[in-house]
Amino acid sequence: MATNPMQRKARNSFLLGMLLTLVIAGAVIALLILQLKNYKEKEKEEQANSVKVWVLSQNVISGQVITTDMLTQQVTNKNFVPSNAIGDMSILTNYALSDKEGNEVITEYKNNVATLYLSKNGTRYELKQEDETEDYYIEKNGEKEYVELSEDPIVAKVDMYKNNIITLDMISKSEEKTTDDLRKVEYNMLVLPSQLETGEYIDVRLSMPSGQDYIVVSKKQVEIPQINGVDSEDTIWLKLTEDEIITMNSAIVDAYRSIGSTLKVVIYTEAGIQSAAIPTYVPTGEVMQLIQSNPNIVETYKNALIQRYNENQSRVRTNINSAISTSGEEGESNLKTKVEESISNSKENRKSYLESLGGDTTTSN
Image (cartoon, rainbow, N blue to C red; front, top):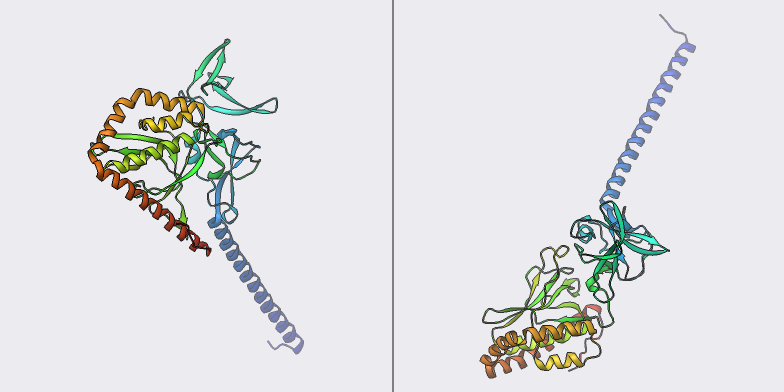
């Protein structure tokens, strides 16, 4: 049936309108698909850049014991997080504080002062510490009941505030709590394990050619210096107290004077749950006299060293002195050579470090 011009014009307008509608709808759909794709890519990128970190749920002062109930986990962009932030719960699990029976230690506030409490048999007891012995105890029926903790507590090195991200630099084991005589000491004469990493805990041992082995210092956290982002191959830093520094110096001399002896580093496999080994090395009588007269050594440490020396000096020093005597003049020559090598290595490391900074490489002789 024939159509008049008006009908054709109306039909064409309708078809054109439909076509335009389809084109616009297609463009809208394409735009939505593109936006959805961009959203998913952005979401994927955000997920890739997201990390879980542990933050404080309350303010903490320097030296305060930190318990896991004071922490909460948050997800944030890794670009805004320090590289040494703690995000792995397993790290904090190793530090989770409880007694040997598994009773949890938590923090509550008593008269606005952070106070430790032990939850035991449905009752919370204030966990106190003796000033003289530093042993922990609770009071039951007016009597002291001593508590052996499963871990050395972790303490805050500095004041921290609510929502601060926790980093490894902010906390330490209580046995590493900063004291007036604590110093960072560099050593480049120790035999290091092939896979030693910064942050691991180690013992330093003196191994004699006869097979005898003495612990010089125990459970120290290692820091490996870097030059141009590369770990040093032979140098480590240890934080030691004055008495430990003197004891290490004595052991270094003994190792050099006894041909075949070595000072080696041994790594703890699970530092979070392993107690510190008891040092067994005994310095020389001359060194002990220095330790006794040194006012920079904390009296508690001094007394412990004197007791160790008095109990073991005959047996331990006899063995060490025998090995030194056997080495004779060769041992004395080796001492001089090794000391010179250590000084030379220190100078070379210092020079490389300055070069990495683009600074002055002049070193004194």
